[in-house]
Image (cartoon, rainbow, N blue to C red):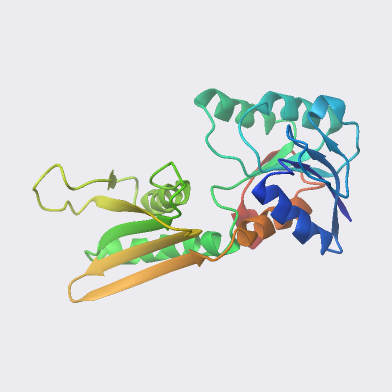
Length: 251
């Protein structure tokens, strides 16, 4: 049984994770951390880690970069690993994360969806073959109208994964409206669509001469990200200090 402390338990993702863990026979949430106390949970909820003295195997963090140091202090002191699902870290915080991985195991992924991580592997293989054959690469990502950042972190992660196997030779083009020139062969176009309640769509287009190959992932609910986080939480206990990713689970 994996004992979990859930940071951000009273947020939308926190509640999705709570419901899924409640139905999981191999995991249980033993405590929550949240500054808001607007829900009744089956487990005790503390406003900070400094007020929590509950023993656990792992922390799932689906909150914000605020008070990151406090969580790391708790985790290092208690020798507890962290599944880090939060985004938007500063350079200083990223440096702190790297330093902390020398003391405890941290699981971090730009997208906790198993599907996204699978197509990332497929895209790397496709990029090597198709870029060499002269195919152009474009990414179109679609999200709900309340998402404030663009392009999405996942779209950038997909581009980075392909660029990695292409020897970092490609630049990223986010907007074509400001110039009237032909597309460069060494670029990855990234377009963002915002509207309605779209949970998340990422489409990668390989456009060649007389043929087009598309690899697409569609998220229909936030539950897919919660499932990935729970999978990571059950994977992390017992691991040595270091940084872990979804690829470590998928092999």
